[in-house]
Image 1 (tube, rainbow, N blue to C red):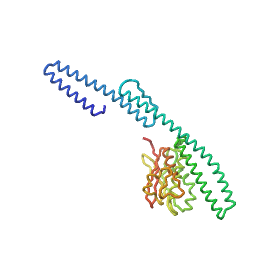
Image 2 (spheres, rainbow, N blue to C red):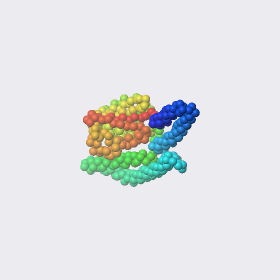
Image 3 (cartoon, rainbow, N blue to C red):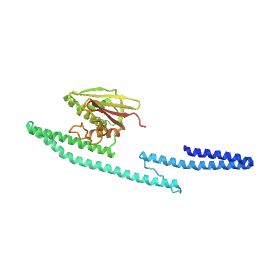
Length: 330
């Protein structure tokens, strides 16, 4: 037992038994022996009963720890009498209730993901038709006001298509209907795949990319990881002015391998930093076209892969994103 009060009580009882036995021994030796034996029997009986109660409490504590970790498949029903049995039965009722609610929540999430998938499919059909029509209008009216309007419409349609696709992926991640395929990948391959779609944008804005990467392997889903990092890169490029710099580096420790993405753009206001990964959050330095979903999507994907992402920024100086791939889980 580890309860200090119980140890003090047993120690006090033993001392009292010895003292009483010594006093009785002065009167009669047999009286002293009987007193000592009875005292020791009572102390041992008290210890045995108390130890059993603490063992039952320790077992209940383990059950609660497993419930907190998400394991509801526990049968601790008890039909015996006593306070601990009543506590066990009440805990069993709570476990059953939590399990039922968890199953209902999971079913609701799956239903929501399915509904969003249906809505996404219904929206993509007219979107595709409108994008085809804008392409035809571009060919017929390449110049003038009509051409400018068509270009604006085309940009907004592409943005809407990206938003629908991203929201659908987020809903599937929330519902748990998709799981990453964990395989070993090299970070250099992932970074090259992430940079590829932005090469033209980087050239047009004359942004210099400095790569200082010590290659390492991580366990994750290549496609999901590329999408997550691309959203981080997209955010950095959008907030970096012309002739700016983008830095990609790594840092390897015994606990994790870290990918660091830094820019010298406008930075993030201090008050916005705690909310930057929240969905649909619009910071003070966010662009007018930002919808606040890219970084939230990146965080959701990386956490699904048991990685983490954090941000550090100084307004007017730049922003640094840190992505940590942990080597082992505690």
